[in-house]
Amino acid sequence: MELKSILVIRPSSLGNVVHALMIVQTIRDHFPELEIDFLVRDRFAPIVELCGSVDNIIQFERKGGLFGFWRLLKKIREKRYDAVLDIQAQFRTGLMVLAAKSPLKIGRRDAREGSGIACNHIIDLPKNPHPHQVDTFLQFLPALGKPAQLGSPVDFQVPGVATIVPELASNPPILLLPHSRGKEKEWPYFRELTHRILESMPGQSVVWDSHIPIPSLELEGITGFFNTTGKTSIPEMISLVKAARVVVANDTGPMHIAAATARPTIAIFGPTRFEKYGAYPLDNPRNRNIQSQEKDWSDVTVDRILALVQELAAL
Image (cartoon, rainbow, N blue to C red; front, side, top):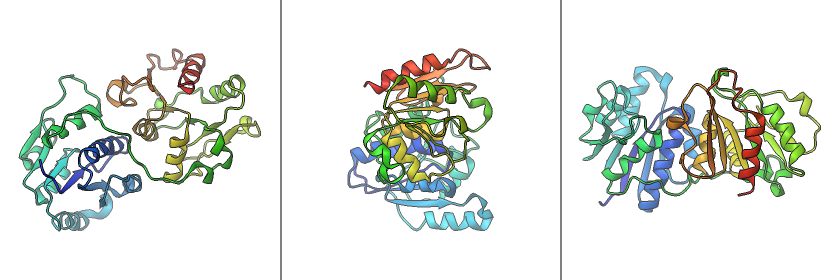
């Protein structure tokens, strides 16, 4: 199949935008000269802007009202695409697909709110009744004449970690991401894990990062510990992820960035199921998805996570 330009539509959310970028990277591997446009909600555009495999970004301003949405549809119609991929598959994105000029409009069999009507090619879904999101997204590749197999790590173009914490340039950190959307998703033992890593792995640095500040008074002043929570931009956060020796995270968007960039990742899950939302590929030895069966997280002990940190750090 000869392709010169495509439009990928995935406005939200952060984790799913990252998953869509994994598909974009795979498409780029197959089609090095292809022009790839990506339609994304303005809130998540900064992530997409850092991906070297995306050529142009179309921003969806969710708070722009009807007039803003009309402007968006006009923007979509300015260009002709060889293919349009509606990875989101909702009513609003169906309208975007309708507006697009393309002979090939690819949608999902599980499309919601009637959005599949806008498409002239519907992808098959994985046979697994509860597939991972990436496995579902990979089914768009056969529609482009390529196998449903993941390609190279996502190419996020960010500054070196030395611009954030100079000490990390020669000492790749264990990166801990203690925050998640919803307290019920947050493993409560990151502080104890930090102490244990610093005690058991001499010379090893540990960094906490999050888009919101998380106090760490009892850890301040300890050699090798750095708290950048509430201080880093999106590019800086990704720089920390790419520099990390191991990433330990809750179910959160940055965890998916770690997996997408092929960093050793320990993802800790509570109420959500890792089978659908875990660090992908699920069967890759560098990814360890831990599912708690208890509301108090008592089955996910610090000893258990520390052992995994030490194992992955040795890879």
